[in-house]
Length: 182
Image 1 (tube, one colour):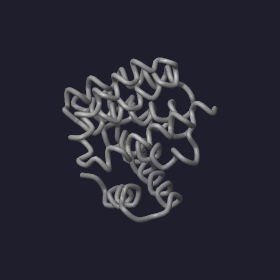
Image 2: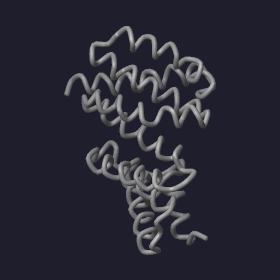
Image 3: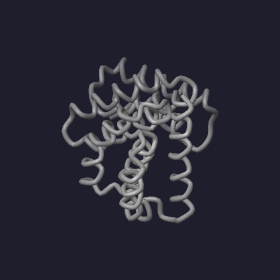
Image 4: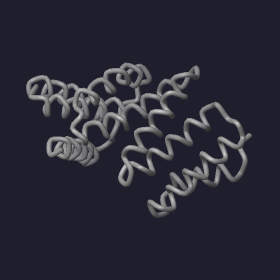
């Protein structure tokens, strides 16, 4: 059983309201509680994931460390590979936005089979779009175009609407544009 303080912190870190600063404080509180409890399970990994999510915009280096630690923990536990794939997707997006196209591709290649096996369409499509953008940035336009086309079936199912699909494609394209400027 998780203590109420940790549960409240999860709700504050991931809930619909709250500022970036309050989400960061809640994520730090999640991690503090997890460490104080001596947890070595998914709750500790999820606490690191929360830190990563809260730090993406303000402190990408800390986000990379947190997602990396969350992924390491998830990969060490049976049945948590899909959670590690979510961490890898976040890391791939950060790599793409910082111009580390090879790293983005490697992270997607590690996680994509897990997402496909779990039939997680939104995660699969997002990773395929990240890889396609990284390929595009690396001068592999034909491979990128083919992968984008392959991603459409997953994306239409995973995102639910054409509008959400276009929004995710624009978001990934924007990450890739930032990486090209770096």
